Length: 227
Image (cartoon, rainbow, N blue to C red; front, side, top):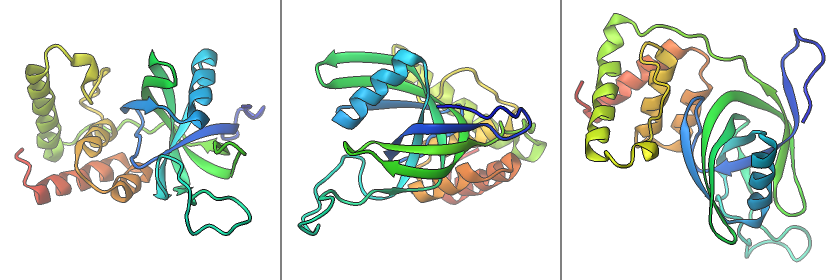
């Protein structure tokens, strides 16, 4: 990985290893992952040792586990095609465990969003990409008319804490909590809602945090979530 020398230019990373998933990682999100595929075991170990991030991208085609395509032609790659959306999120490994050989259990936190400038797949199946990091999102205070959406998330977290007092480190919402940040509140709600990955991806790529929170509030209304 390398960055640009011009401080005024957008920060870029080269050959960033990617982890395509059927879900979306948001900035400041908390994601547990169970790693067993060979193409990811070495990548995660290297990133953890170096203190380097990897990129999480949402799949638009294919599955998280690499599969043989029975309809593939006799020549060329026999694996099913994988494709993913062009905007993802950097992930930093915060906890790593090795319960048995060939298995890693990690918890990672979402950092900045990035735009993929170009990607390619290595022979053993790992995707790497050259990416441009997007600026850290501006903090927009939660407006009065959306405070009920914020308060409902606080109540949900309190209920989870009461229900799982011995598993606080496993809860989907982890500190630091930024209850007066519209983008943070919106992101945490989207992570919890049973919405399709494509919808979560669209909300993650929105650059306006207040609009994202307004859309989340509308979703909660449609789902009948009490606030």
